[in-house]
Image (cartoon, rainbow, N blue to C red):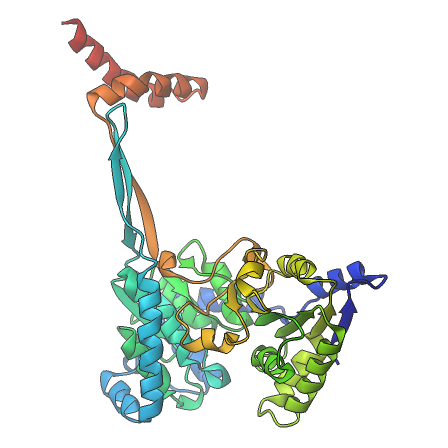
Length: 437
């Protein structure tokens, strides 16, 4: 059974704090293993990647078969049923339209002293997108990672998608095709992250790596950060639903289970101002778990990490939500827009009972790669901005140098950086000489 809490009970603060700090990731000590894998790939390149792929994915490759050929991709795409292709195309269209609106503009101006200042945006040259394989092979993740990169103008897009036992997901390949991916490699794990970061004889290195993965992938991304950029270190999925009594308990139960079925370590929390409604949702969850295909996973998640919290009012619900800083936040209340203005820490917010989080996973438009483990307090979901760099631009005229240069020279002297000051002073001397002639 999930945890039942009531904000009016003695000991609530301690129980809520324990809920926030519970360890949800059953993560083995993987860092040493990952360090060895990265070192091996750096030293032996293709040979290391091929050996590790055979060990972990039971798949024998050669340098020529690391990438899935264009012919294989075409054949796989032909296998996709028409309805699924249409759904994926709709998702791609909506995701692209949403992210196109995120593109920032270059800006330049001349200040009163005559200096021209500004900034410009440019895309990273190459991005590597990691897509989990096996049971967690999601074409939607391909779209969510690749389309923002494509919209940003990234020159080269590659995907690493492991294919255990050689099994390829045709929808993943169709998604890669729709998103403009140049190459799909059939490799995964820490070795794929290392190959994209450092390169091998066959795999060219990239500048930015994004995409979810298991503990080994997360540890590898953490280790290669600095050599390349990364999006985030993502943990198990999570959802918080704030709901009043005027909701269908079965709808809310399904929304909670939509995240619980991802992973036994996922977390689903309901906050409500009506204890009876909370109990009704709990009963609905148990009833759905009797027939859900992934009931073993969802049931373990709900049992070990689920929670139903009863509060005085929705204002208190918003306060608790900000402390949780959930990855996904559903506001199933009479005025969700008003409540959303009070919930400032969330990866993504879904307004109203007709906006289930599952829409956001596929066809809503906003990105579903979101901060987890309370990191929504200080970070954002994946966007076009993750694939762009801002470069500042400045140009001094003689007049601008004369106006602001002396202050720069003074500050350089105060920091005992002589050459800094002299580089400005030399120009000021030329200007002063010219003025005196």
